[in-house]
Length: 571
Image (cartoon, rainbow, N blue to C red; front, side, top):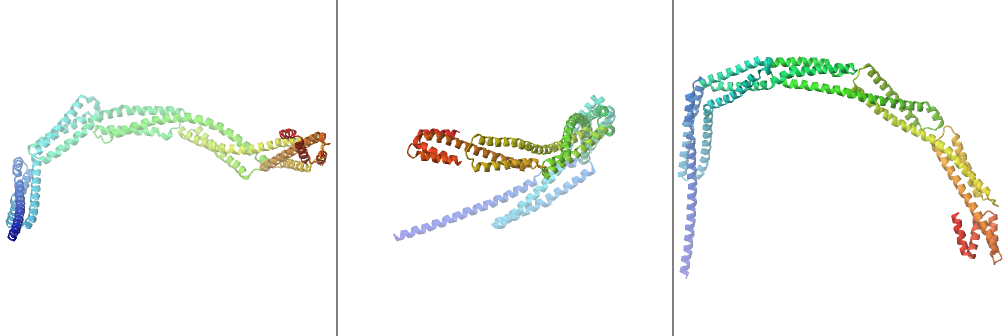
């Protein structure tokens, strides 16, 4: 058993060693294959560079080289091609041979470094070769490219000449200049054919660019000249005439239009129109259309300014009439207040702020009147346009409105003082009547005694009324003090009246109850209570007398007590 175990162990070790060996061989084989493929790919990339058809394209250029410039180009291309063949590709071959040597030696680390350098060199050579091929192809394709461009230009040129020939009347005096320009273009086409015969592509490019520019210019000429001639010969002069006519009419109607500077501007438009026509005759179209459109827009704006002046005149006339009416009313009001100010100050104790406010309002009205006088003078002299006059009258109207509002406040304040005075006099009469009523009420009932409270309140009421009369006789009157005096007198007289009414009511009810209770005086103790009530009544203590009688009545007949009590409350 021990021997078998050893065999198994040895076999396992041998199998493991073989497995490791096989893996190593496989990895080496894969690595070797990778480098082999990489070297083959580099060789392939190098061969692709060598197969670029530079020589074939260069032979086409050599066949076309009929001028010195093209021959110099061929020599340059040959030098660049020889560099590729004799220097760059052999150098890559040497690098590939060196790579094979390191590969055979299994020096993979060095191989990696050499592979990168070789790849870069192949890339550099390929780019150099492609650039050379592109330069050569540019020449070989120039003939076809330039002829294609010329063909398109000829199509545009024929369309322009065809339209010009069919609408020659539209171009008026510019026709000869256009014909000469077309002849110049035709000559340039012939020059192109000559340079193409000698394969002089550099001059051909200049001619193509020149023709493109000339045909572009003629496209603008053919498109814009008829419209420009129409606008310069008919539309602009017509509009200028309309502006002048309208200007003369409005000046005759009294409008002030100097700010528009119409005569000078119309002369300038006429000059500019002739200048544009001169430039059109030599086919100089720079900014012509823009300038014509600008002048047309300006002329249209002038008609809008005319209309604006008419509207402003109507608006000014209406605003001026309204302002003049309001100004007259406000002047009358402020003059009336200002003329009466001394009298008002003597009548009422005005605050200094109230007086200053009225004076300031008068100063503001003076400024408004002065400005309005200046405005009317400029209107009479016809020195200001209605648009400006309307703006000024609107400003004056706003200023007048502000002064009017402040004046209304001042008048309201003065009116309140007068109203308070009149109200105080009316209330004084009512208070005196009320006081008289209180006295008559007291005298209408023959009381044995009148309480001191009545006479104290009567005296207070009389003094308060005297203070009101005194305040009304003062000059100037202090309204706040007057109102306080009136309120005090009214309250005291009302208090006296209530006191008088209560005294009379208590006395009446007390007297009636005493008479009524005398029926029960023969009952026990009733006569004492009744006598007590009578004594209180005779001393003027009517309320206590009434309470004494009511207490007795309540004890004798509760229903009668309730009836009398409710009757007292109602009265």
